[in-house]
Amino acid sequence: MISNINLYCNPFLKIDYNKSQLLLEISWLPETKKMTPSEYQECFYTYINIRKKYKVNKVLLDESQMFFIPDPKLQNWASNLINTKLSTRASHIAIVLSKEFIQQLLVKILIEEVLHDDFNYLFFTSKNDALQWLIDDILIEAH
Image (cartoon, rainbow, N blue to C red):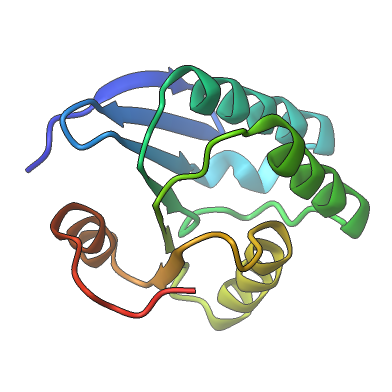
């Protein structure tokens, strides 16, 4: 098991850092059911600022409990923020999806709009599988 340091936590988002793996773990929390667009933006800014401070090679994005669905305008805002504010890219991004099909579909659409072909990312339904891919550098074809 890898040892993480908690960098940030609010009712919607938890961000942990693993220095030995240069890994950032971002977990959306069940309270995202009640999240507003401005709270989403605040969380996103926090993530961007942490990513800029901690140079990481790997990101685990746990979307399995993300219930807030940003509208197209907010999706564009998030995509632009990533493309303009992050000068370095993580070498691997593992995205853990919900087990609910509709939620999976919505998250995949959002992620694929934000993360373009220049990102090396892969979707998972298991957090353990996602961590294994990130830590062990398993050769699975990613985007």
